[in-house]
Each structure stands twice: as structure tokens, then as C-alpha cells.
Length: 290
Image (cartoon, rainbow, N blue to C red; front, side, top):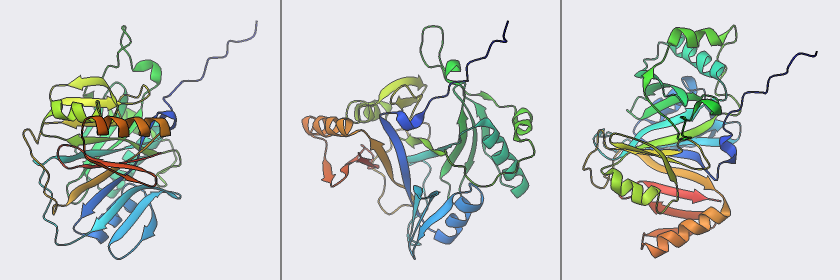
């Protein structure tokens, strides 16, 4: 009798979700320092560079745009804005190699967690913008017995993770990587739900005390909002360093529906040749492109 051939492990294909994070734009005070950090620590490639702006990504695909202005006030962690930008790696071995790279470079991490749907490492850039580097667990491990996505924050075994690196060194952010999600600081989760669910059209596959997770196409979340640091925060000051905008790619039909919902709800928005720009209740720019 021939040996049974096991089915390949299935992972969520984030590129096929109706809505995907394409890029994040940050306003920074020290452009040269921030460029160096994202290139050397995260391994992003410099795609375009000018006196006041640097675009980094993978190959020709931009993921991060840094706009420099020394006159900006420092980022206030109690304001609405960015909690973290989460960079998704294709495989657990990539996460292990990146961890080994950070140890070799002496880069301080702020945390390491097993979220049941993913395994994640946390740090901050030199200006305090949060960063998550993560890899998803197999899709079969995401759901409970009732079919709901289950998420938690449990310790991550770093030694076991490092063992996955093998003899291959980190060689920069790999092809197939992307921004998997963006986690925002908001002043009120109810208001955030009404914008990101009711206007943008995302599902809420999971909640946590003080946080909502917004997903599309069955993913655990492409966006999230929490009040842990910014409860009751108002509109974010315009002259402050930190998050400038989140760029989102979505299907043309989805884009039309967002525009219709925004019009019906009298949510200010502006159309441009490739899509639509809106601002959430705290002034965070959300740029949608089909």
C-alpha cells in the first residue's frame, strides 16, 4: 500500500483579501536616522529618495514612506495615531532569522507574543513609532470549536523560535512580505467601530478589552484600534511627528461601496483619480485605492 501523502499546510493568502494594507506614511523629525533604521534593522530597501522624503519597500513595491521635517513636535504616545505598523513575514523561519539579526545588532525588543493566530515580536523605531514583526500560524489553528477566530496574548518561546533559523542568515525583508495590519490608537472604540466597520466596511472578527480588530476576507485583522494609551483623545495635532496616513488597496466594487456609505453618512471624503481619501474621527488619513 502506498504511503499516505499529507496535504500541505494551508496559510491565509492576504493578497487575495478584498482589502489590504499597501503602505504606511510617517512624518519624522530625523529623516536620515529613520531611513537608516528601517533599512538596517528591518531590511527594507530604499526605492526612492529625496531631500525630504524616502520611500522604502521590497523590490519596487513601496511599504513605508518617511517625510522629514525637523520642526515637527515629538510624537506624543497619549495621542490618537499609530500603535504599531505590523510587517508580515512569509514564514516562521523568516521571523527566526530576523530575531537572530536583531540579537546580533543589539536591537532592543519591547515584547514577544503568541497570539494563537500569529507569532509576533515588538519594538519601536528611534522616534517611538511602534513596530510588530510577525508571521501567521496555519489557518487551521485560528478558530475555536464554534468557528470564531480566537486571539490571545501568551508568551512566545524565543529559544524554540531561534531554532527555526537554521544556518541561513537574515538577508533583508524577503519577497512575499508585506504590511499585514496597522494597529491604531483611538479615543473611543465605539466611534472607531462606526468608522472602520460601518464606513470602510470591515468586519470585527475579534475584540479585546479596550480594542477592536477589523478584518476583511476572513483575516484576523488588517486594522485595529485601541484606547489603551489614548482613551478620550481628540483630533491629532497636525504638526506632530508620527502617523501621517494609511494607504489601503481594495477591490473596485468595495471602493464604490465605501464612497456610497460615506455619502449617506455625510462623512467628509475626497475623490482622486485612483480612489478616495477619508479621515477617521481623530484625523488619521485613510487613502483607498482600487
